[in-house]
Image (cartoon, rainbow, N blue to C red; front, side, top):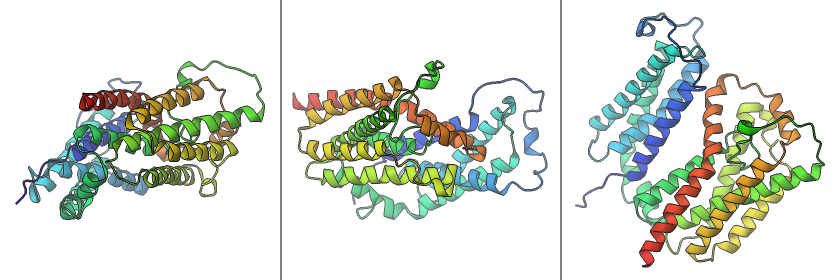
Length: 357
């Protein structure tokens, strides 16, 4: 019987998701003060009337992946009831800590109902992980798929987490298509200068092309030899576009599902895919170098370009409402992603060079 090894990918995903939950729960991180509330008063407070059904559902589903990933991260050290208990306790402890911290944020409200919903979501996720352990871990499952399609090693697992975060960044409708690394809000100065429409078409095309090319090349560098990298790259871009469409439909309006489709977005995405199909046959060293250059170019374009008035007009009609926390998470992931990816590419190139020596 083969001794099963713990999954580094599951542990990385668990840590990454827990950090995103912390950020979403404490966003926007300002205005901290003691409001004179008893530390544990929210535990015995009466439930809100009427019952905030939407908030309860969001909290349940928000913590479901946390319990799921916690149980997988504990496997095989903990199995069955032990893994279920670990996932459930992780959700309860994290939720309790965050609800307690929210007492000191005037923009947030601590709630025992939120704690219960989070605990229920974490337990449901842990139960799903325990029930699906066989399908997820054994030869016919996802672990076998990961081992067959991707290179071995924990460093590659980190790259897969980065790819997942890139997909998550497309859930932010405030950015251009694939427009990660946008830091203009930190340094923006008022400007009334007008620009012709062609400028924004070129900007959006350059941003989309550069990021599609960089993300696809990063995926190439994670794949094991002999894999259909061109098919996987196209599937990755298609998944990102599906996330983008779903985000516009959910966060803005159902009829806005394709509002992101502009000439610049289409030209840029098509160009990026075409470049990927060509670069799929390049040596890995060349792919790493091109990925870094594409990231630099796309990030420079998105930060040096003027704000797109058409996107601004769409966002001005957007009422974030209950999705404020989610939007805060996707915004910070989108802004930080290319810099994290660049650092990872340096590590990947260094490791690749060592294997050739």
